[in-house]
Amino acid sequence: MSNLVGSQFIFKSILKGQFKKWDDVEKKMLTRDTWDAGYRFVITVETDKGQLDIGEGQLGMILKAFFDKDTCTSNIKNGIVEVKSNGKTGMDIRYFFNNKGYATGNPEAPVQEPEKEVSLDELPDF
Image (cartoon, rainbow, N blue to C red; front, side, top):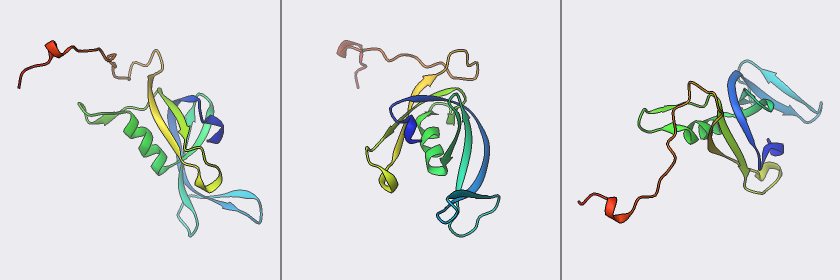
């Protein structure tokens, strides 16, 4: 994920979810289909930059970034996701995701109206 900080990716699909844990002795990632102590649930997603492992919280952040309050849905298919971090490294790094719209040609994406300026004269009286 750290190599995506300051750039964007296009979300294509969710491939699978599984439990993973880093083995310090063997220096490799261990995977399981069921939970065991020390393992965390990771979701593998397909993007235009290749496969990416994200945590449940990160997927939640992406879904929240694309949430449409009018329809109470979150369409992330072909969503352009910008990746930022808190600038820290190692265990202290945290990633943040911003909605940058949708890739062109996505028939499933909701139409996003550009924001327009409104003058005080156009506001309704209360």
